[in-house]
Image 1 (cartoon, rainbow, N blue to C red):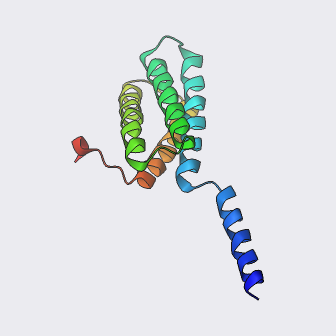
Image 2 (cartoon, rainbow, N blue to C red):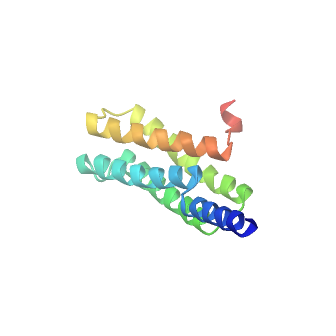
Amino acid sequence: MKALLTAAVLVALAGCSSTPSKMTDAADRLERSAENLYEEVRRDDDTSDAAREAQRLTEAADEFSEDLENDRDREELRERFEVVAKSYHELRDELDGEDVDSDEGEAFEDVTRAYLDLERELEYRRVGAL
């Protein structure tokens, strides 16, 4: 009986370890959606400020994902998220001043959902935003 219980616990733990965490999922979605937004924005104008900011966000999201994969501690991830947050807010401000088409708008909504999910998982709050 004890062996069966032990085996069941090991199987359950193995299943948990292969399932991505909410933070990993949010980071992956942010990375993909930022890349998609970058492609959408630069399709219209590869040299625009919005394209440059979208590229920065894509790079920041990629670096955050790498840190997450390398098992950085929560505090290190929050520090890296500072870069993501700064890039996200600069891109949002840039897009507010532009005529955004529907594909770009949808792509930015995907970025925003992933960004907010990641922010929530990190329990991160921008001090300057309060």
